[in-house]
Every structure is written in structure tokens, then in C-alpha cells.
Length: 435
Image (cartoon, helix red, strand yellow):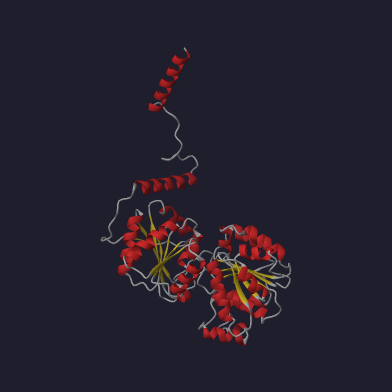
């Protein structure tokens, strides 16, 4: 029978007090299954959607194993793909470690390493890091891994997508071979399976739902919308008519995010901020804090924010653009419906993006209902450039399915016409010159 309370998990009093402060009522499914296995020393492969309590599922047993501050060298390393996720994990770990003397440090890029190195040299028990910054500081001689006993890889699928495999392999070479390994991922593509086989030893597999499953508390829908201007009209309509507490709007590009932010801000539909990789680290942290504390109604973001936002009261997620990396759909909409609360995920799709909707449905093994645009939404005319982009995308998709397909944008062979007449005239002129 699975544990019914955190006390059943045999956690120490310090952690139980912190759990009570954080108002965690009972362990989630992933916590019930993972924590006992980790405490018993098993390597673990955990598959769980975002919003299921995954972070505490590995942080709690790591805190139990490390127990108290000791020496000056790191004893547990948690790797995550983005600064935002690193900061979120650090925050959860520090809250759960409130009644201990454990030293927990977040290490990430975007800021100079000097301060982080000084903090490490002062002594650290647990490091939460992005792979690149960890190796950067290690190569400077500031991190000693001799006493490292636990390695956690969180969001392993995103690490693969972001090209972190070389850094992860280097890290595996410089940390002790005898250690406990934990890998967590919402999806389990082949490259993640290959990674798990590379460094996990006889792992226990914990799966609280089939991989890439979306949470049942999220109400999903999509609308076919022809172009960007009409998408903006519909966003404006939703913000004016729907009861949003906090809404996250995801765009494919930084330029679209900036333009949408400016429009919504100008229309007074906020408070609204924008978040993407061109924003400075302090700005990103400040924006996240405002959103988390409820001072922002709307946050427009690229996929930099699709992981690492642990805000329990996001009422709506809007996919302004359909993600072409289908796993990102799972992570985007997982920002709502957290902690068993109800959430809404709305996706806008133009003609070319409908292809991706079908593939996302295959991934999540669920049909996403299509809804009709309200009649009062003004349908704007598509620009020539937009029509061309959509036509190219459709051609590209059809060509991937059928390599023999010849679309509107395939290379055309020269055929009799003006160009050939021009060439023949030039040839005759050159012949006359030679005479």
C-alpha cells in the first residue's frame, strides 16, 4: 500500500516541519513512488508530467541523504537545462531545508562566475546548476567532486533538445563513478533512453502516467486562425472577456513576444511583461517574481519559460504559435492546472500549424477539441509575406512525408520563355562580334 502521508515516507522532523510550513497536504503519486526508492539507494528513472510534484520527489530524498552541512565540497549535484528551472529548484530546496544547516547554491550562466565561485569556496553541500556553467566553474578549479555521492538530471528531454549532451558526458567523466543517479523527464524519446542506459545502473522506473501525458485538470482547445493580426485580435478579446487570474502566452520568436507585449501594454490589458533570452538575468528574475506574486496578470514568453515556472495559480496558457518541438506543448500547458487545480490551455493555429496539432495529438494520445472563433472577432487579411511563409511551411511538411512531392517552392528547371529568348539573342550578338 502506498504511503498516505509524508510521515509514512520516514522523512526526518526537520523536513516534515518545512513540508507543513509549505502546506503540502499529502505526497503526490510521483513522490509516493520515488522517495522510498531513492532513500533505499536505487538509481531511478522518473517519468512524470510537469505540475505533479516532481521537484520535491527528488529534492526531499537528496536532503535526507545529505542530512547536514559537512566539509566544504559538494555532495549532491542537480542539473537542469535552464536558469529559470535551476532557480526554481534552488528555491524549493531551500524552503524544504529551512530547519537544516544545509548550504544550497544555484549556479547558472548569464551573470559573471566570480560571486558563484566565492560562494562555492565558502563551502557548499548541494549545487543546482546548468551543465555549461558547472563545467565552466569546474575547469577553473573551484569545484571539487571527490565527495559527490548523488547526481540528479531534471528535464532530461529538454537537455537533449538544447544540445547539452557533450557537457553532460564531460561531467560524468569528472565525478565519482560510485554514486546514486536520478533521471527525471516528462517525455522519454530515444535519445533520453540512450542517455539513461549510459549512466544509470539497474534503475527502477517510476511512471505516474504514460510519458507525454497531459494533466487531466487542464481543459484543452484549439482555434484555427489565419494570421498574426487575427491572433492578436483574439488575444485582446480573451483578455477583455475571460476571467484570467494569471495568463501565460507563449510565442515562437522573441520578436513576436516583444510585439505582442507592446500591443497589450499599449491597450492597457495588463499588467503585462515579456520574458525571453535577450532579457538580462536580473530582469528575468524580477519578472518571474512579479508573476509569481500575482502582480502581473499577463506574461508573454518564448519557450525559455515553458519549464521552470512553478506558479500554482496560472489560470490560462495561450499558445500564440504552435510549438514545432511537440514535447514543448506538454511543458507549456503544464504551467497551468498545477497542484490539482483546474486550468485552461488554448492554442492558435494557422493553416500550416494544423499539421503540428495532429502530431501533438498523437504524442499526448488525446484529441484536442477545435472551437470556432466568436463571430465578433475581426478576421484580418494575411500579408503577402505571411501567405508565402505558410505556403513554404506546408510544402516543407508535405515534402517530409513524400520526398517526391513538388510544391510551389521547388527548384524550377529552365523552360522555353523570355529567359531562353534573351540567351539566344545574346548568343547571336556574340557570334556577330566574333565575325
